[in-house]
Every structure is written in C-alpha cells, then in structure tokens.
Image (cartoon, rainbow, N blue to C red; front, side, top):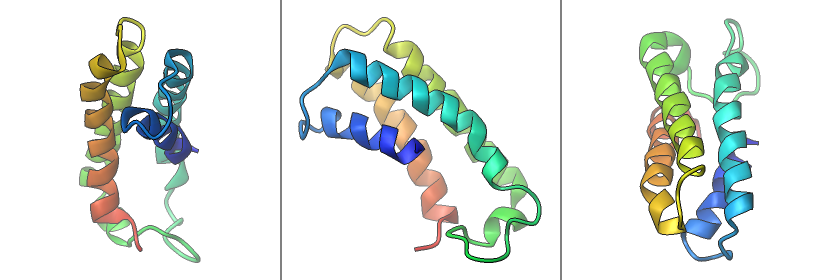
Length: 112
C-alpha cells in the first residue's frame, strides 16, 4: 500500500501522470501514516516462511530501525510540504528525500 502511494506521486513527479495537487496531498498523507505502520510488519519471528525480506533485517535491528525512522520523518515532511507548496516543483525535493529512504532500505534489506 505504501508503494502504491509512492508510485502515484512518482508518476506525477515524473510527468507520466498529470499533477493533481489534491490527489498528491492525499497520497503523501497516506504514505506518512503507512510509514508509522511499517515496523509492525516485521515483528520478532517474522523472519521465517515466505518473506521478501532479507534475514539481515533481524540481524541488524538498530540500523533497520534507523531507516524506518528516516522513512517516518521524510514522509511526514512530504505530507507537511503538501500543505504549503504551490507547485509540483516545490514538492519534488521532499518527494525525492522520501523515496531515497525507501530505496536505502530496499537496497539493503529487500530480497529480489
């Protein structure tokens, strides 16, 4: 669900979809909320079975938790920016920062 929100905003940011300020704002607010739920998806014991996560998540919890904190902070900043931004260009830095937090975690902890 978080990826769907990021994808919707990314399509607008890249020009693949028309910019809709209201839809972008809703997607940013949803992403900010969902980022607070992501830690709940990785409870102790969830490292077994069919998972797309690398085992390093459970071996390196301090770093993983830091990345989750970055995600919360950057998506919250993006949601806040939608309240005052007057254009898509004004939102792109906050959107880029948020997506970089996703990428940093996925690059290290998501199995292909």
